[in-house]
Length: 323
Image (cartoon, rainbow, N blue to C red; front, side, top):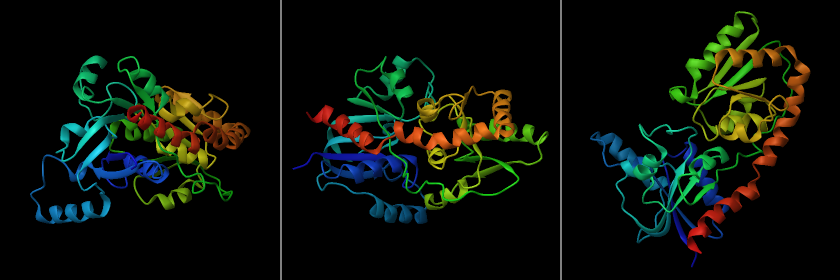
């Protein structure tokens, strides 16, 4: 009998869902993987009957449980889930995820020291899993068993298929603009507005939602990605753009911190509008440098984020508890 693992994401289709499904698809030969979601197990239930019916139907569609709801391992992909979960399962070991960079991580509303954070959110967990090496290295000073593991973006889906002839210089951005730590309105929009005062052909192209299958088309005519986040383990935008051969000007967070070699395949910047403007101006004027970065970034990203290696990371995390 294979060990049983229940993986809790927040919502079907969101970022944690992608991690959950990556594990489920790639480790099903060695573990029995089950899935559930925060949204279907919250302590507070909606009083709206239509929402309750929709939740019931979605839960039947997306969740998968053992009959006895007793697992070897439960993996909560976000540290704050447990405060909101109405738990209906038992387990031997628990893994807690931290997938936001910086301290305190977003969604915690926490004010205190790292030691106090660990006591409040991680005191009953056996292992911490972090979304980037940078996050892992921070928490390793405060918790005994900390690992790095994430999912891998489909490099067959995200592959540049054509050269788009155009006069505009396009800065791209995808994600949820309402999440303040991503800096869309406070930084990305303002950077582009400043650039447009000098260069009329600079455009901002944004996408806030939509199916992943259409995302490659969004990136086809983008010249550079601007990332102004201060709390991402990814973001997935960086991985998608890199695989589409689009370099990034990014804050030193998550995946960019692991892949970008400053000035060679992209630029790392502080969360400063003037600095972001300067780096994009460099690429606007120096198209040879932009082209050189474009030629490098896909391969550099694939070297750092290898599917086989990431599968092994997850397997090692689970076996560290089971063995």
